[in-house]
Image (tube, rainbow over all chains, first blue to last red; front, side, top):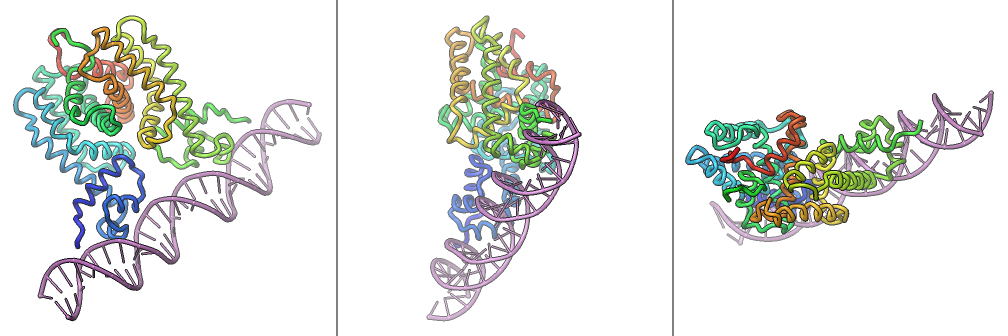
Length: 182
Length: 182
DNA sequence: CTCCAGTGAGACATCACTGTCTCACGTGGG
DNA sequence: CCCACGTGAGACAGTGATGTCTCACTGGAG
């Protein structure tokens, strides 16, 4: 009888990531639940988005933990990170857009994650594995941007979902230029 | 007396690129014009966005022409393209987001531009200058994604506006990995 | 079996935005 | 000078989403 709050969040994430402005009743329908029930669990749209934020932040952090960014080469670590990010990529894409919208009142959890990602890139630079002429902050933003682009490309069927991790990692690491050795 | 329609479009683009959902009266204020006047020039919000689309498509196309994508190496051509895209990057970022929202009813002008960009990447692949394991469609989406990320990074002051072209081109072409030769 | 907590459906007031209209004003051209 | 056009300010109704409330129902616990 009682509705699974987690399933509601998941359904909301899936819908809102494609249609950020979807009305509450549409979110409710997507979650297979009445509008009243949705509203009982989340005081309002803001609360719902806030909950999605917290969920996204937690999952993002968990993905970073799982990727063990300190082990092995920076390149391998980045590949692991992207692979770990893939399952929640839709949600992250939605949240990144959302965060860009409301520059003010951003959850401080994002700052922490941003800092961790940037620190990882900086470490790679200090190790001589990443280029030093591209600021860590830029690499971080580029990661987010490519994440969103990849999610969209998959949604549109422009690229295969299976290639997600490969395309992300290869472009971010090696770029489009054909290398002499490859 | 008469208001400069072009200036209104420019102001609208600047505001909406940061705040896509801004109400019409805010757009009007940003353009230094009354809401009624804004409405006299653009029948409604849709018409305004449509006008921005057309403007963006035209400018994007002009930038591609100016970049002379057929001359010289593909890498040089891509650098020229990114440099030519920079002045209108805010607008393009807004329009790309807008296009992602309304998958249906997309201006066919975008398809044409998409096709030109993809064809350029494909040509580079056939010439052996771009990697063939990254589909041209993905490179195209990545270009858009990085464009948006770069605009945002500059807006947030995370990177210097002067580095826009360099950061975009270097990441897209060479990626984050430190090359052996560089 | 009997409650009752949780639910879906719908009514309702409210709110923000929109698009239209009117009216007074000022500037520029005739 | 005077008129007319374009403008700004504001009023107005319409619309869609929101948040709250009520009510009837149902499935599960006791």
